[in-house]
Length: 213
Figure 1 (cartoon, rainbow, N blue to C red):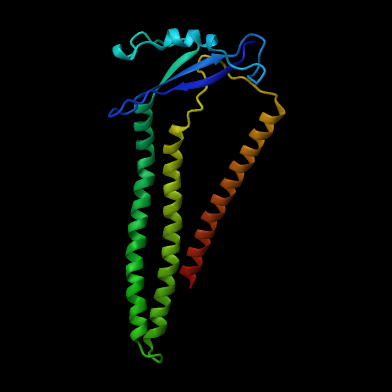
Figure 2 (figure 1 turned 45 degrees about the vertical axis):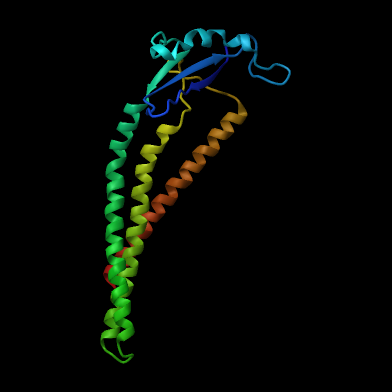
């Protein structure tokens, strides 16, 4: 079975946004599974890519999708990602505004507390309000961070150009190094999920304690 290494073709033109990204999967030479110092790449191997490349003068009109070449509509991909991420980003902005409002109120309360006599009966009331505002601001900032992260998680992966050839079926690797790397990635993902759940529970319990207080 032929071995392949996937490469992305980028053509950035000044003043023009990137709308389409082309990929070309270059095959290793017959009987070769990787490149090395003793078995390096050879220029003549890239004759098929050179023939396929086309001419920028006519907008690469001759370039076509093949078993080794495919394109990604990056413009549409970005638009879709922004649409999905926007509600989360908007929520983060809303939470940020709420936290800013409470922060301004908190500064006023602290200033009022400084002007009160130490024996004033209003001090306990102000101190309680300050504690509540401080806790609320902390909760809002934690919620804001999660909302922002949720939006970013939907948007930024579009720039990950590790794109598999859609013309080739799923290939299962039995390489121990790849399996261990995949296992570590899964463990990290599980740890991140546990941390997110813990943050949500901590926030919920904190709010309940504040209500009871």
